[in-house]
Length: 312
Image 1 (cartoon, helix red, strand yellow):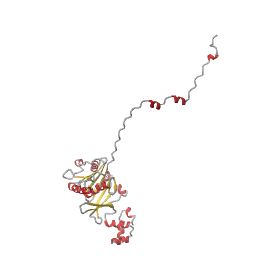
Image 2: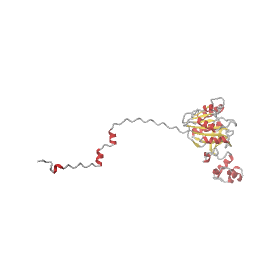
Image 3: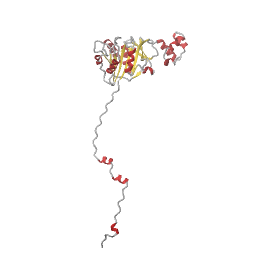
């Protein structure tokens, strides 16, 4: 008998139920598993990062009539080397300072005083002009003489005075700044005999500009100068205080300096302001200095507002 008609032979086995997603995921190798089983490629050595050179910084100083370029340049160099300040403005201590004199006589003076400062071990060096006459830094030949020290360092350039008919242009000033201030170098340019218009041009291309004028020295000093931010500059607007630098020579011919905040180039006004800050009355100050109360009041009234508002 044929068995083809039996119902048990004509039925099929049920299909295998589908696997769950979790089971499929577990049975399928993932990309991370494949990557782990694959042979690892040797890693390339990382290149050392080059240290970034700090941006250049440049400042300018404009000397008034009869102000000594030698004393000013010497004072700037010593303050930068020992305190890291430029007329009270913090710019960082400078271990290496290259000071370019304006001419050969001033170069000899600067070398003499720098040598006495720290017996030639201070890191401050003085360079004489490589030309017989003072260089003209407005010309390409003069700019080519400005070879700044390797960064990090500082260069102070005493710019020779020029005739009143030969004025500095903004193009000349920018060219001098670029030649004296490569990356990583702090530069200070000391100008002599500039006009007010030229001082204004300085503010456009330098981080800060100071003016230095002769003033009455305090007791026991031979001479003094007052340094202040140029009028209308950001430093002046933000209240950076002027400084007085009193100077004298000791018995051995070494420069002695005393720098402090200054409210006026006039010695009497400075004394009045100092006594007023101590709490003395106008009558007491007048008796101590031999002046009327009205004179004391006028002196104080002539001071800038931020100075007189505390003592009137």
